Length: 114
Image (cartoon, rainbow, N blue to C red):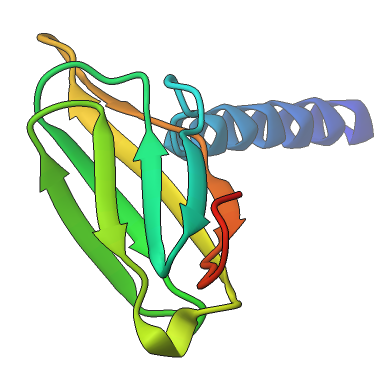
């Protein structure tokens, strides 16, 4: 009897693990963008094709969304974010599925480009 209960419990746990694994978010398919900043502006370059949607998470926690026709983004750093870290990622449709990038982090700089 105890063996049967152990086998049933193990089977249920295995099924639950498989169901949970299927619900996990997809891993990033595209590499994280390269970003640099200077003169209160920033530039990011991704490995996307066509229309690219950028997600920029500011130091305050707010998120800015930008859409570009290609793989690059050039924008201004908000004054409140100068000297603080920013996270950037992007997504694009490759013709059959939406690809999501990894995330990179950079500092919004008011001085020289880095």
